[in-house]
Length: 179
Image 1 (cartoon, rainbow, N blue to C red):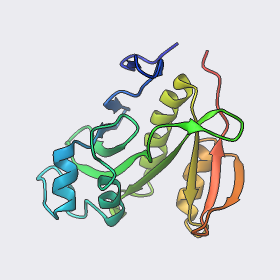
Image 2 (tube, one colour; image 1 turned 180 degrees about the horizontal axis):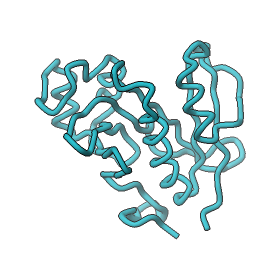
Image 3 (cartoon, rainbow, N blue to C red; image 1 turned 180 degrees about the vertical axis):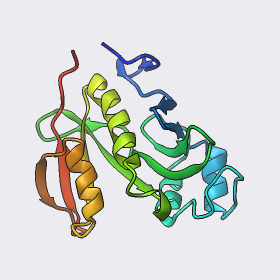
């Protein structure tokens, strides 16, 4: 069963991700090309938290050439429309060594939004969609970033694959069957 609002990509013949994902407290909207350009130019949008975008958000914006459902998204509070973080994938899934499609996720929040379960909520929302698409997800995290390691553990990232060239832990979440 494909979650409501999920689109089929006729070129790929598989499930694509919707441009907007809603949770109880959040909306996860894809960066538009204009928003990415504004972020990279150091501009401000009145909907953005004073500490947003962070450098990691600008790095994500630098990947936006065209809007891609596997690209970066704003993390926005539903009740007031404040954007205070980003989440997304570093591109569409590619086959892993075992031929299972796999995508890497990244996320980050402004400092005063941390510790409230927001990152966990956002990651879980995207995992529902990746499970429906048959895509396994991995993440790279600084070993000293205990909060992010906890988020990944809460979201089912149980496979430790060692470290990448930057010394970050690489963790993967086993693909879950969709009923």
